Image 1 (cartoon, rainbow, N blue to C red):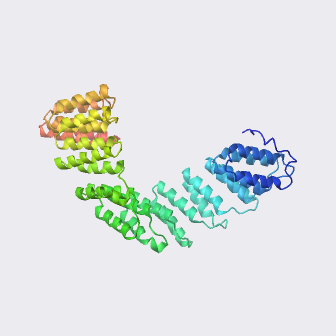
Image 2 (image 1 turned 180 degrees about the horizontal axis):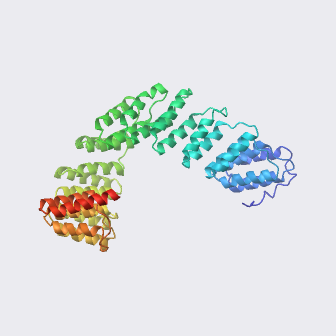
Image 3 (image 1 turned 90 degrees about the vertical axis):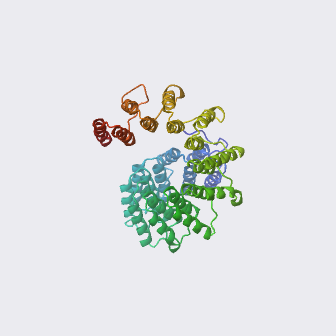
Length: 482
Protein backbone atom coordinates (compact mmCIF):
# COMPACT_ATOMS: atom_id res chain seq x y z
CA UNK A 1 0.00 0.00 0.00
CA UNK A 2 1.29 3.45 -0.89
CA UNK A 3 0.77 6.70 0.99
CA UNK A 4 -1.46 9.01 -0.98
CA UNK A 5 0.11 12.36 -0.10
CA UNK A 6 0.21 14.58 2.96
CA UNK A 7 -1.61 17.55 4.33
CA UNK A 8 0.68 20.00 2.55
CA UNK A 9 -0.45 22.90 4.70
CA UNK A 10 1.09 21.16 7.74
CA UNK A 11 4.84 21.43 8.15
CA UNK A 12 6.86 19.56 10.74
CA UNK A 13 7.05 22.68 12.88
CA UNK A 14 3.48 23.86 12.34
CA UNK A 15 2.21 21.65 15.17
CA UNK A 16 3.83 21.97 18.57
CA UNK A 17 4.53 19.08 20.92
CA UNK A 18 1.19 17.61 21.99
CA UNK A 19 -0.73 19.39 19.28
CA UNK A 20 -0.22 16.46 16.90
CA UNK A 21 -2.16 14.19 19.25
CA UNK A 22 -4.95 16.73 19.69
CA UNK A 23 -5.15 17.19 15.93
CA UNK A 24 -5.30 13.43 15.30
CA UNK A 25 -8.05 12.97 17.86
CA UNK A 26 -10.16 15.76 16.33
CA UNK A 27 -9.69 14.51 12.74
CA UNK A 28 -10.59 10.93 13.67
CA UNK A 29 -13.83 12.19 15.20
CA UNK A 30 -14.70 14.08 12.01
CA UNK A 31 -17.76 12.94 10.05
CA UNK A 32 -15.68 13.20 6.86
CA UNK A 33 -13.05 10.74 8.07
CA UNK A 34 -12.23 8.14 5.39
CA UNK A 35 -9.33 5.97 4.23
CA UNK A 36 -7.54 8.90 2.59
CA UNK A 37 -7.88 10.93 5.77
CA UNK A 38 -6.31 8.08 7.73
CA UNK A 39 -3.32 7.85 5.39
CA UNK A 40 -2.81 11.61 5.46
CA UNK A 41 -2.96 11.63 9.26
CA UNK A 42 -0.40 8.85 9.34
CA UNK A 43 1.89 11.01 7.18
CA UNK A 44 1.57 13.74 9.79
CA UNK A 45 2.47 11.24 12.51
CA UNK A 46 5.53 10.05 10.55
CA UNK A 47 6.77 13.60 10.01
CA UNK A 48 6.15 14.72 13.58
CA UNK A 49 9.22 15.91 15.54
CA UNK A 50 8.30 13.60 18.41
CA UNK A 51 6.43 10.27 18.30
CA UNK A 52 2.70 10.64 18.87
CA UNK A 53 1.12 9.10 21.93
CA UNK A 54 0.07 5.46 21.75
CA UNK A 55 -3.51 6.64 22.37
CA UNK A 56 -3.35 8.57 19.08
CA UNK A 57 -2.27 5.45 17.19
CA UNK A 58 -5.02 3.44 18.85
CA UNK A 59 -7.62 6.07 17.97
CA UNK A 60 -6.50 6.13 14.32
CA UNK A 61 -6.37 2.34 13.99
CA UNK A 62 -9.70 1.87 15.78
CA UNK A 63 -11.42 4.50 13.62
CA UNK A 64 -10.00 2.95 10.46
CA UNK A 65 -11.09 -0.53 11.61
CA UNK A 66 -14.65 0.77 11.86
CA UNK A 67 -14.41 1.50 8.11
CA UNK A 68 -13.58 -2.23 7.67
CA UNK A 69 -10.37 -1.41 5.81
CA UNK A 70 -8.40 -4.07 7.65
CA UNK A 71 -5.48 -4.19 5.15
CA UNK A 72 -4.92 -0.47 5.75
CA UNK A 73 -5.01 -0.98 9.53
CA UNK A 74 -2.35 -3.68 9.28
CA UNK A 75 -0.22 -1.64 6.86
CA UNK A 76 -0.15 1.39 9.17
CA UNK A 77 0.69 -0.86 12.13
CA UNK A 78 3.61 -2.55 10.36
CA UNK A 79 4.93 0.72 8.91
CA UNK A 80 4.78 2.44 12.30
CA UNK A 81 6.66 -0.46 13.90
CA UNK A 82 9.28 -0.30 11.14
CA UNK A 83 9.67 3.45 11.64
CA UNK A 84 10.12 2.87 15.38
CA UNK A 85 7.42 5.37 16.32
CA UNK A 86 4.99 2.85 17.83
CA UNK A 87 5.21 0.92 21.09
CA UNK A 88 1.97 -1.10 21.03
CA UNK A 89 -0.02 -1.69 24.19
CA UNK A 90 -2.74 -4.23 25.00
CA UNK A 91 -5.38 -2.14 23.23
CA UNK A 92 -3.24 -1.93 20.05
CA UNK A 93 -2.75 -5.68 20.06
CA UNK A 94 -6.52 -6.11 20.40
CA UNK A 95 -7.15 -3.95 17.32
CA UNK A 96 -4.56 -5.87 15.29
CA UNK A 97 -5.83 -9.28 16.42
CA UNK A 98 -9.40 -8.32 15.50
CA UNK A 99 -8.25 -7.03 12.09
CA UNK A 100 -6.36 -10.26 11.40
CA UNK A 101 -9.40 -12.32 12.40
CA UNK A 102 -11.80 -10.29 10.26
CA UNK A 103 -9.38 -10.62 7.32
CA UNK A 104 -9.29 -14.41 7.75
CA UNK A 105 -5.66 -14.52 8.98
CA UNK A 106 -6.47 -16.37 12.18
CA UNK A 107 -3.03 -17.88 12.74
CA UNK A 108 -1.47 -14.41 12.52
CA UNK A 109 -4.02 -13.23 15.08
CA UNK A 110 -3.03 -16.08 17.37
CA UNK A 111 0.62 -15.14 16.80
CA UNK A 112 -0.05 -11.58 17.97
CA UNK A 113 -1.79 -13.02 21.05
CA UNK A 114 1.33 -15.09 21.76
CA UNK A 115 3.51 -11.98 21.38
CA UNK A 116 1.26 -10.09 23.80
CA UNK A 117 1.57 -12.84 26.42
CA UNK A 118 5.37 -13.07 25.94
CA UNK A 119 5.60 -9.36 26.73
CA UNK A 120 4.05 -10.16 30.08
CA UNK A 121 0.73 -8.49 29.32
CA UNK A 122 -2.65 -10.03 29.98
CA UNK A 123 -5.11 -9.97 27.07
CA UNK A 124 -8.57 -8.75 27.94
CA UNK A 125 -11.85 -10.51 27.21
CA UNK A 126 -12.48 -8.38 24.10
CA UNK A 127 -9.27 -9.66 22.50
CA UNK A 128 -10.12 -13.30 23.19
CA UNK A 129 -13.70 -12.81 22.01
CA UNK A 130 -12.35 -11.56 18.66
CA UNK A 131 -10.25 -14.69 18.28
CA UNK A 132 -13.01 -17.07 19.37
CA UNK A 133 -15.45 -15.36 17.00
CA UNK A 134 -12.97 -15.57 14.11
CA UNK A 135 -12.22 -19.24 14.77
CA UNK A 136 -15.94 -20.04 14.92
CA UNK A 137 -16.69 -18.20 11.68
CA UNK A 138 -13.97 -20.19 9.91
CA UNK A 139 -15.27 -23.51 11.29
CA UNK A 140 -12.31 -24.04 13.62
CA UNK A 141 -14.63 -25.07 16.42
CA UNK A 142 -12.11 -27.23 18.26
CA UNK A 143 -9.57 -24.37 18.41
CA UNK A 144 -12.30 -21.97 19.59
CA UNK A 145 -13.33 -24.32 22.41
CA UNK A 146 -9.68 -24.85 23.45
CA UNK A 147 -9.15 -21.10 23.64
CA UNK A 148 -12.37 -20.78 25.64
CA UNK A 149 -11.15 -23.41 28.09
CA UNK A 150 -7.78 -21.60 28.44
CA UNK A 151 -9.42 -18.32 29.46
CA UNK A 152 -9.36 -19.30 33.13
CA UNK A 153 -5.60 -20.05 32.89
CA UNK A 154 -5.07 -16.54 31.56
CA UNK A 155 -7.11 -15.09 34.40
CA UNK A 156 -9.91 -13.90 32.16
CA UNK A 157 -13.59 -14.51 32.85
CA UNK A 158 -15.79 -15.09 29.79
CA UNK A 159 -18.55 -12.54 29.37
CA UNK A 160 -21.97 -12.71 27.70
CA UNK A 161 -20.38 -12.02 24.30
CA UNK A 162 -18.09 -15.06 24.68
CA UNK A 163 -20.98 -17.36 25.50
CA UNK A 164 -23.16 -15.84 22.79
CA UNK A 165 -20.48 -16.40 20.12
CA UNK A 166 -19.98 -20.03 21.16
CA UNK A 167 -23.70 -20.80 21.32
CA UNK A 168 -24.28 -19.23 17.89
CA UNK A 169 -21.40 -21.30 16.55
CA UNK A 170 -22.80 -24.53 18.00
CA UNK A 171 -26.18 -23.71 16.46
CA UNK A 172 -24.65 -23.39 13.00
CA UNK A 173 -23.19 -26.90 13.21
CA UNK A 174 -26.37 -28.32 14.78
CA UNK A 175 -24.67 -29.19 18.07
CA UNK A 176 -27.54 -28.60 20.48
CA UNK A 177 -25.82 -30.56 23.26
CA UNK A 178 -22.75 -28.32 22.97
CA UNK A 179 -25.06 -25.29 23.16
CA UNK A 180 -26.50 -26.61 26.41
CA UNK A 181 -23.00 -27.31 27.75
CA UNK A 182 -21.96 -23.70 27.06
CA UNK A 183 -25.17 -22.47 28.70
CA UNK A 184 -24.34 -24.63 31.72
CA UNK A 185 -20.88 -23.02 31.95
CA UNK A 186 -22.50 -19.59 31.75
CA UNK A 187 -24.95 -20.35 34.58
CA UNK A 188 -22.22 -21.97 36.68
CA UNK A 189 -20.07 -18.84 36.31
CA UNK A 190 -22.92 -16.80 37.75
CA UNK A 191 -23.66 -14.98 34.49
CA UNK A 192 -27.18 -14.31 33.28
CA UNK A 193 -27.94 -15.27 29.67
CA UNK A 194 -29.17 -12.43 27.47
CA UNK A 195 -31.97 -12.57 24.90
CA UNK A 196 -29.56 -13.27 22.03
CA UNK A 197 -28.28 -16.39 23.79
CA UNK A 198 -31.74 -17.67 24.71
CA UNK A 199 -33.22 -16.97 21.28
CA UNK A 200 -30.28 -18.78 19.69
CA UNK A 201 -30.84 -21.73 22.00
CA UNK A 202 -34.56 -21.82 21.17
CA UNK A 203 -33.76 -21.74 17.45
CA UNK A 204 -31.35 -24.63 17.96
CA UNK A 205 -34.01 -26.70 19.72
CA UNK A 206 -36.52 -25.99 16.95
CA UNK A 207 -34.00 -26.89 14.27
CA UNK A 208 -33.49 -30.20 16.11
CA UNK A 209 -37.29 -30.65 16.19
CA UNK A 210 -37.38 -30.37 19.99
CA UNK A 211 -40.38 -28.08 20.30
CA UNK A 212 -41.10 -29.00 23.94
CA UNK A 213 -37.55 -28.09 24.98
CA UNK A 214 -37.91 -24.75 23.18
CA UNK A 215 -41.15 -24.02 25.03
CA UNK A 216 -39.49 -25.07 28.30
CA UNK A 217 -36.80 -22.42 27.74
CA UNK A 218 -39.53 -19.90 26.94
CA UNK A 219 -41.23 -20.69 30.24
CA UNK A 220 -37.99 -20.36 32.23
CA UNK A 221 -36.90 -17.05 30.72
CA UNK A 222 -38.28 -14.99 33.60
CA UNK A 223 -36.31 -17.15 36.08
CA UNK A 224 -33.17 -16.27 34.10
CA UNK A 225 -33.87 -12.56 34.29
CA UNK A 226 -35.11 -12.18 30.71
CA UNK A 227 -38.45 -11.42 29.13
CA UNK A 228 -39.26 -13.08 25.83
CA UNK A 229 -39.33 -10.59 22.98
CA UNK A 230 -41.19 -10.55 19.69
CA UNK A 231 -38.37 -12.46 17.96
CA UNK A 232 -38.78 -15.29 20.48
CA UNK A 233 -42.52 -15.57 19.95
CA UNK A 234 -42.33 -15.21 16.16
CA UNK A 235 -39.72 -17.97 15.95
CA UNK A 236 -41.80 -20.45 17.97
CA UNK A 237 -45.16 -19.51 16.41
CA UNK A 238 -43.76 -19.83 12.89
CA UNK A 239 -42.26 -23.25 13.69
CA UNK A 240 -45.51 -24.50 15.25
CA UNK A 241 -47.63 -23.59 12.24
CA UNK A 242 -45.10 -24.89 9.72
CA UNK A 243 -45.01 -28.25 11.49
CA UNK A 244 -48.75 -28.68 12.22
CA UNK A 245 -48.59 -27.90 15.95
CA UNK A 246 -51.62 -25.67 15.54
CA UNK A 247 -52.99 -25.67 19.09
CA UNK A 248 -49.53 -25.04 20.47
CA UNK A 249 -48.99 -22.17 18.02
CA UNK A 250 -52.31 -20.53 18.93
CA UNK A 251 -51.46 -20.96 22.60
CA UNK A 252 -48.11 -19.17 22.18
CA UNK A 253 -49.88 -16.38 20.26
CA UNK A 254 -52.37 -15.99 23.12
CA UNK A 255 -49.46 -15.79 25.55
CA UNK A 256 -47.86 -13.07 23.42
CA UNK A 257 -51.02 -10.94 23.68
CA UNK A 258 -51.34 -11.66 27.41
CA UNK A 259 -47.93 -10.14 28.08
CA UNK A 260 -48.79 -7.01 26.11
CA UNK A 261 -46.46 -7.62 23.17
CA UNK A 262 -47.69 -6.11 19.90
CA UNK A 263 -47.60 -8.67 17.09
CA UNK A 264 -45.75 -7.81 13.88
CA UNK A 265 -46.68 -8.53 10.27
CA UNK A 266 -44.51 -11.68 10.59
CA UNK A 267 -46.64 -12.85 13.53
CA UNK A 268 -49.90 -12.23 11.70
CA UNK A 269 -48.66 -13.92 8.52
CA UNK A 270 -47.67 -16.97 10.57
CA UNK A 271 -51.10 -16.97 12.17
CA UNK A 272 -52.88 -16.84 8.80
CA UNK A 273 -50.64 -19.65 7.56
CA UNK A 274 -51.54 -21.75 10.59
CA UNK A 275 -55.26 -21.13 10.19
CA UNK A 276 -55.11 -22.06 6.50
CA UNK A 277 -53.12 -25.21 7.26
CA UNK A 278 -55.66 -26.17 9.91
CA UNK A 279 -58.47 -25.69 7.35
CA UNK A 280 -59.84 -22.75 9.34
CA UNK A 281 -60.28 -20.59 6.27
CA UNK A 282 -63.11 -18.57 7.74
CA UNK A 283 -60.95 -17.51 10.70
CA UNK A 284 -58.02 -16.76 8.39
CA UNK A 285 -60.23 -14.58 6.19
CA UNK A 286 -61.57 -12.74 9.23
CA UNK A 287 -58.05 -12.04 10.51
CA UNK A 288 -57.13 -10.80 7.04
CA UNK A 289 -60.15 -8.46 7.04
CA UNK A 290 -59.16 -6.80 10.33
CA UNK A 291 -55.54 -6.18 9.33
CA UNK A 292 -56.10 -2.39 9.15
CA UNK A 293 -57.18 -2.42 12.81
CA UNK A 294 -53.85 -4.00 13.78
CA UNK A 295 -51.91 -1.14 12.20
CA UNK A 296 -50.47 -3.33 9.46
CA UNK A 297 -51.26 -3.61 5.78
CA UNK A 298 -51.16 -7.06 4.15
CA UNK A 299 -47.95 -7.73 2.21
CA UNK A 300 -47.22 -10.13 -0.66
CA UNK A 301 -46.70 -12.99 1.82
CA UNK A 302 -50.07 -12.31 3.47
CA UNK A 303 -51.92 -12.36 0.15
CA UNK A 304 -49.99 -15.38 -1.11
CA UNK A 305 -50.64 -17.38 2.06
CA UNK A 306 -54.37 -16.69 2.04
CA UNK A 307 -54.69 -17.31 -1.71
CA UNK A 308 -52.89 -20.63 -1.32
CA UNK A 309 -55.20 -21.55 1.55
CA UNK A 310 -58.27 -20.77 -0.56
CA UNK A 311 -57.05 -22.61 -3.65
CA UNK A 312 -55.87 -25.87 -2.13
CA UNK A 313 -59.38 -27.26 -1.76
CA UNK A 314 -61.72 -28.63 -4.41
CA UNK A 315 -64.42 -26.14 -3.56
CA UNK A 316 -65.60 -23.65 -6.18
CA UNK A 317 -66.51 -21.04 -3.58
CA UNK A 318 -63.16 -21.04 -1.81
CA UNK A 319 -61.28 -20.86 -5.12
CA UNK A 320 -63.52 -17.93 -6.07
CA UNK A 321 -62.61 -16.34 -2.73
CA UNK A 322 -58.93 -16.81 -3.60
CA UNK A 323 -59.41 -14.89 -6.84
CA UNK A 324 -61.19 -12.18 -4.86
CA UNK A 325 -58.12 -11.83 -2.63
CA UNK A 326 -55.97 -11.79 -5.78
CA UNK A 327 -58.05 -8.90 -7.17
CA UNK A 328 -57.62 -6.95 -3.93
CA UNK A 329 -53.89 -7.62 -4.08
CA UNK A 330 -53.66 -6.07 -7.56
CA UNK A 331 -55.92 -3.19 -6.53
CA UNK A 332 -53.59 -2.33 -3.63
CA UNK A 333 -50.57 -2.18 -5.92
CA UNK A 334 -48.86 -5.43 -4.95
CA UNK A 335 -47.08 -7.42 -7.67
CA UNK A 336 -47.87 -11.14 -7.45
CA UNK A 337 -44.96 -13.54 -7.77
CA UNK A 338 -44.96 -17.01 -9.38
CA UNK A 339 -45.95 -18.58 -6.03
CA UNK A 340 -49.25 -16.65 -6.06
CA UNK A 341 -50.01 -17.53 -9.68
CA UNK A 342 -49.13 -21.17 -9.09
CA UNK A 343 -51.63 -21.28 -6.21
CA UNK A 344 -54.38 -19.80 -8.43
CA UNK A 345 -53.58 -22.23 -11.27
CA UNK A 346 -53.64 -25.12 -8.81
CA UNK A 347 -57.02 -23.94 -7.53
CA UNK A 348 -58.51 -23.83 -11.03
CA UNK A 349 -57.12 -27.29 -11.82
CA UNK A 350 -58.55 -28.69 -8.55
CA UNK A 351 -62.07 -27.73 -9.68
CA UNK A 352 -61.39 -28.99 -13.24
CA UNK A 353 -61.33 -25.53 -14.85
CA UNK A 354 -58.19 -26.43 -16.74
CA UNK A 355 -58.83 -24.21 -19.76
CA UNK A 356 -59.03 -21.14 -17.51
CA UNK A 357 -55.83 -22.28 -15.80
CA UNK A 358 -54.14 -22.50 -19.20
CA UNK A 359 -55.28 -18.98 -20.08
CA UNK A 360 -53.90 -17.69 -16.78
CA UNK A 361 -50.52 -19.28 -17.52
CA UNK A 362 -50.43 -17.41 -20.85
CA UNK A 363 -51.43 -14.14 -19.16
CA UNK A 364 -48.75 -14.46 -16.49
CA UNK A 365 -46.05 -13.24 -18.84
CA UNK A 366 -48.02 -11.30 -21.45
CA UNK A 367 -50.24 -9.28 -19.11
CA UNK A 368 -48.64 -9.44 -15.68
CA UNK A 369 -44.95 -9.66 -16.59
CA UNK A 370 -44.31 -12.72 -14.46
CA UNK A 371 -42.64 -15.70 -16.12
CA UNK A 372 -44.12 -19.16 -15.48
CA UNK A 373 -41.68 -21.60 -13.89
CA UNK A 374 -41.41 -25.40 -13.82
CA UNK A 375 -43.91 -25.56 -10.93
CA UNK A 376 -46.43 -23.57 -13.01
CA UNK A 377 -46.25 -25.92 -15.96
CA UNK A 378 -46.15 -29.05 -13.78
CA UNK A 379 -49.32 -27.87 -12.01
CA UNK A 380 -51.06 -27.36 -15.35
CA UNK A 381 -49.84 -30.77 -16.58
CA UNK A 382 -51.29 -32.36 -13.45
CA UNK A 383 -54.58 -30.57 -14.12
CA UNK A 384 -54.69 -31.80 -17.72
CA UNK A 385 -53.96 -35.35 -16.59
CA UNK A 386 -56.68 -35.04 -13.97
CA UNK A 387 -59.32 -34.49 -16.68
CA UNK A 388 -57.86 -37.28 -18.87
CA UNK A 389 -56.32 -34.85 -21.40
CA UNK A 390 -53.01 -36.67 -21.26
CA UNK A 391 -52.15 -36.05 -24.93
CA UNK A 392 -52.26 -32.30 -24.30
CA UNK A 393 -50.13 -32.77 -21.20
CA UNK A 394 -47.54 -34.69 -23.26
CA UNK A 395 -47.47 -31.92 -25.85
CA UNK A 396 -46.93 -29.32 -23.11
CA UNK A 397 -43.96 -31.29 -21.73
CA UNK A 398 -42.38 -31.39 -25.20
CA UNK A 399 -43.13 -27.68 -25.64
CA UNK A 400 -41.38 -26.92 -22.32
CA UNK A 401 -38.18 -28.46 -23.73
CA UNK A 402 -38.37 -27.04 -27.25
CA UNK A 403 -40.00 -23.61 -27.01
CA UNK A 404 -40.66 -22.42 -23.47
CA UNK A 405 -37.10 -22.64 -22.18
CA UNK A 406 -38.30 -24.12 -18.90
CA UNK A 407 -37.01 -27.65 -18.60
CA UNK A 408 -39.17 -30.30 -16.93
CA UNK A 409 -37.86 -31.87 -13.74
CA UNK A 410 -38.44 -35.27 -12.16
CA UNK A 411 -41.76 -34.10 -10.68
CA UNK A 412 -42.98 -33.02 -14.14
CA UNK A 413 -42.16 -36.37 -15.72
CA UNK A 414 -43.52 -38.30 -12.76
CA UNK A 415 -46.77 -36.34 -13.05
CA UNK A 416 -47.09 -37.19 -16.74
CA UNK A 417 -46.19 -40.85 -16.12
CA UNK A 418 -48.91 -41.02 -13.48
CA UNK A 419 -51.36 -39.47 -15.95
CA UNK A 420 -50.50 -42.05 -18.60
CA UNK A 421 -50.92 -44.88 -16.08
CA UNK A 422 -54.31 -43.50 -14.99
CA UNK A 423 -55.67 -43.70 -18.56
CA UNK A 424 -54.30 -47.24 -18.92
CA UNK A 425 -51.39 -46.42 -21.26
CA UNK A 426 -48.81 -48.26 -19.20
CA UNK A 427 -46.50 -48.90 -22.16
CA UNK A 428 -46.24 -45.19 -22.98
CA UNK A 429 -45.58 -44.53 -19.30
CA UNK A 430 -42.90 -47.24 -19.24
CA UNK A 431 -41.23 -45.77 -22.36
CA UNK A 432 -41.13 -42.29 -20.81
CA UNK A 433 -39.79 -43.85 -17.62
CA UNK A 434 -36.97 -45.52 -19.60
CA UNK A 435 -36.26 -42.29 -21.49
CA UNK A 436 -35.83 -40.27 -18.31
CA UNK A 437 -32.38 -41.60 -17.58
CA UNK A 438 -31.15 -42.22 -21.11
CA UNK A 439 -32.87 -40.24 -23.89
CA UNK A 440 -30.93 -37.05 -24.62
CA UNK A 441 -33.84 -35.67 -26.63
CA UNK A 442 -35.65 -34.89 -23.41
CA UNK A 443 -34.34 -33.06 -20.38
CA UNK A 444 -32.29 -35.70 -18.59
CA UNK A 445 -33.21 -36.51 -15.02
CA UNK A 446 -33.31 -39.73 -13.06
CA UNK A 447 -36.59 -41.21 -11.79
CA UNK A 448 -37.09 -41.06 -8.03
CA UNK A 449 -38.81 -43.44 -5.62
CA UNK A 450 -42.25 -42.01 -6.44
CA UNK A 451 -41.69 -42.55 -10.19
CA UNK A 452 -40.66 -46.17 -9.62
CA UNK A 453 -43.64 -46.80 -7.32
CA UNK A 454 -46.15 -45.46 -9.87
CA UNK A 455 -44.71 -47.64 -12.64
CA UNK A 456 -44.61 -50.77 -10.43
CA UNK A 457 -48.20 -50.24 -9.28
CA UNK A 458 -49.42 -49.73 -12.85
CA UNK A 459 -47.60 -52.84 -14.10
CA UNK A 460 -49.05 -54.94 -11.30
CA UNK A 461 -52.53 -53.57 -11.99
CA UNK A 462 -52.23 -54.53 -15.67
CA UNK A 463 -50.97 -58.02 -14.77
CA UNK A 464 -47.39 -57.54 -15.96
CA UNK A 465 -45.83 -58.97 -12.81
CA UNK A 466 -42.48 -60.01 -14.31
CA UNK A 467 -41.91 -56.51 -15.65
CA UNK A 468 -42.96 -55.08 -12.28
CA UNK A 469 -40.41 -57.24 -10.45
CA UNK A 470 -37.71 -56.16 -12.90
CA UNK A 471 -38.50 -52.48 -12.23
CA UNK A 472 -38.52 -53.20 -8.47
CA UNK A 473 -34.99 -54.63 -8.72
CA UNK A 474 -33.93 -51.56 -10.70
CA UNK A 475 -35.39 -49.33 -7.99
CA UNK A 476 -33.45 -51.10 -5.24
CA UNK A 477 -30.21 -50.85 -7.21
CA UNK A 478 -30.76 -47.22 -8.28
CA UNK A 479 -32.11 -45.69 -5.08
CA UNK A 480 -29.62 -47.45 -2.81
CA UNK A 481 -26.65 -46.38 -4.98
CA UNK A 482 -27.46 -42.67 -4.57
